[in-house]
Image (cartoon, rainbow, N blue to C red; front, side):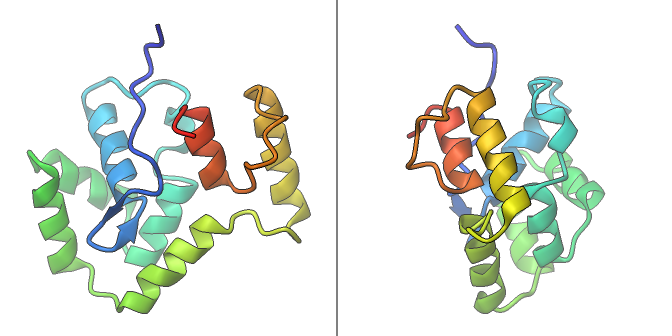
Length: 141
């Protein structure tokens, strides 16, 4: 049996923000000393950093928000009160996540192929983005 506790899917949404529940899970696991070592190099980077960019926050701010909350609802309330962006910004964030890497992004496509090969998923033609890859690698699809 695996000792990995998987965070929620990057497709999960909170307050209209895709990926936020996953990011919260990763921070909570990190603070508890239970975030699997495979996740540590990208904590606050990758899709986490993309969310932070759109939200206008730093990783350190989010760690403190999660550290000072008991339940997700408290984090959601904090985000609602402190991250004031129009729905178009949340939609642009979601679109960027769901389309990465774009078909014309040779470097991103090469990285996706490599990750699929490393995970034994090279045969999965349905995995076309990193969101797909994460869900497949974490055995959701």
